[in-house]
Image (cartoon, one colour):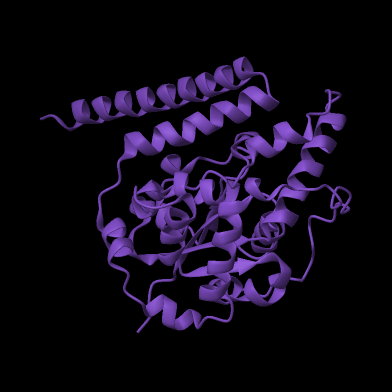
Length: 295
């Protein structure tokens, strides 16, 4: 008896080896099986549909990115396997600071202050988990408590300091054997930046608790484990308006930051006009066929 293949749905927390993970998977799976939300702008440039525009989302095997949201899980149903990756919070934050300073230089912009970057990225691992899965996070407890409640309902968490070992569970579920290539080989300059503890306090607590739960865990057992809150989430009908609001909010943010938003709107309108012309052609043909069939 053939069982349906799982659909892996993951949150790409920045600077947690997500680019390497995504590109390894993309090298092994057909394009129709992967939907990435790390760069919605990339989807637009490559002519890839967003989730609600995919004709048959059940063909997907891997959904991963910064803009993953719990409403996507509701669209996909019981086959979903939830995962994410974590990194030592001090190391991750140092990498974020280094990246943002380097990016500003590449764009010819003034370098942001370290303090401004730290304020924006404070406890970002916790914040991303809670904001993407608010139902699982709940309202009670500290930020670390709420983020950990999200992770308790995940099946897999990989760790960047043991990436090859801990990410292998993801590749096994996808039945792929990607080459062990690192697609993010930027240098480690910036690792000497001092990160005050209060900027990563909740992330540090989350990281330690996640290591205790997931490092060396029996993935098969976690896949068989029934988590009431996760099952309830899977069984709840999706709120498509909420998902649209989320996706298009982040699409607009990316387009506005990296492209001319007017060009994007014009291209979307061009596609819409062409689709309307196609539909009108079909409707006209249907009417003509009906007339021919009349006695």
